Image (cartoon, rainbow, N blue to C red; front, side, top):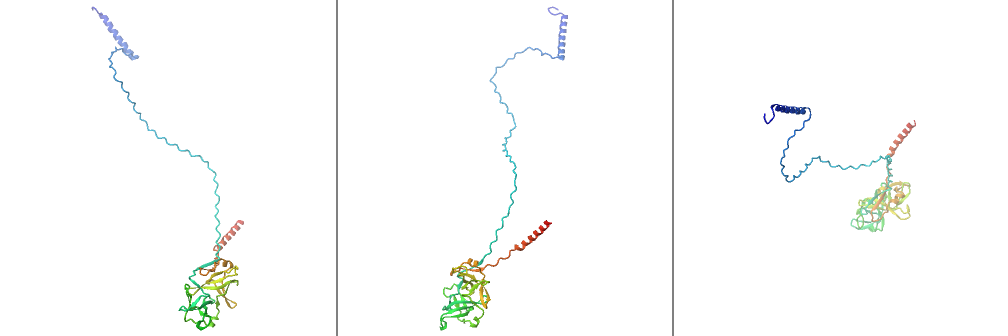
Length: 318
């Protein structure tokens, strides 16, 4: 062959190429292969445009943090103290009982009663015929007669005459004569007046033991012709000064002594001193002795604990 390789040369070249391929295949199997060498092709590069702004980083989602809780102040550590037992409670002693009253007073308005002594006595027609000078009571304390000092009655001079108590009417509020005598009233017979009775004015009032309390100087009569109180002169009984008091009519007792009727009232000196004085035209404070105190109900009950206490002491002694 002209101008080229001969046939044996071509065979040799082809065998050499196959050998190379065989060797390259073995290298791939048995070891790393080198990258094939390729002719680089230059690619034209377009001119760069305006710079691209960097994109903002995407926000990263995070869990919302819990608000911080305020810290609680620590309580101071208090060491326990030794607690002492409270002192025993002592019950207060009961107040002492009030002293019993000395007297009992009853108020009588001055318009409800009228004094007996020297009060004018008139007839129903208003003519004054005399003045009252005394009242006579029986052993039960009932008024029986009134002694009137008549002034020229029936042409006779002044004289004292007893009339039945029922023959009179009292009007305490009358401005003139407070006592009216029944026109048909007749004097009390002397024989009836001699019965066991007591003229009150100037009578001495005593205690049960015979001690003198005072002297009756007047009697207070109400609108029903009933005595309500006596006025006593206690001068010299408890003080040298002249002093008068009013005593309730119901507080008087009438007893027979030495064949005579005597009024009694149990008023001690202390009770007389505690009585307000009597004053004409003022409300009357009539006194009565205070009733004796009732026996204490605890007296009987107090004896029972004493017996129990004695028994317990006896058992303890065993």
